[in-house]
Image (cartoon, rainbow, N blue to C red; front, side):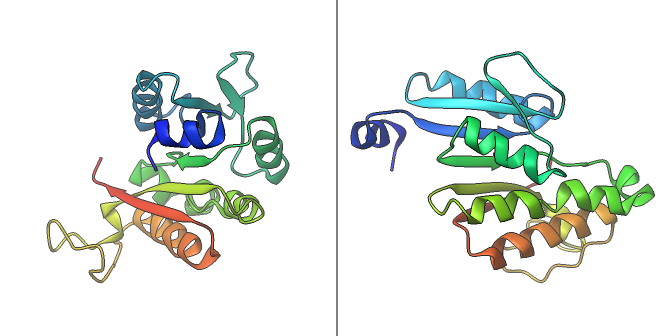
Length: 172
């Protein structure tokens, strides 16, 4: 359903929450482009830090209470998760912290209790071993670094969760 059709059906713009949208590279670009759609979308971005900016919501993926509060403050129709520790070296140095952010267990748990929310999760082509460029979606995975392993764990978690979802693999 297109944004305009959604608004006609519900009487309000579709609500889109972009996790990582206030500070992450990809999230900021996404938020800026979604805002260009205009009144057909009500877009909010998240930040881990406390904020007084009206279009930003505080949310820490490692804190279930923070996630619940964000979903109550702005009940979204769509959650786009762009948040990640994406530097492979940083993930290798601290794989546990990378997994806490890149494998959004608490977010998925929260979304499962809101079955109408669509989760769009940004993943990476680093879930593959790199031996074949432009791998098909269903090609065998084989990440060769901690970043790729964490993103593959996230994909598996989301697919197994039962929540409505889309997983996009980017090469950024």
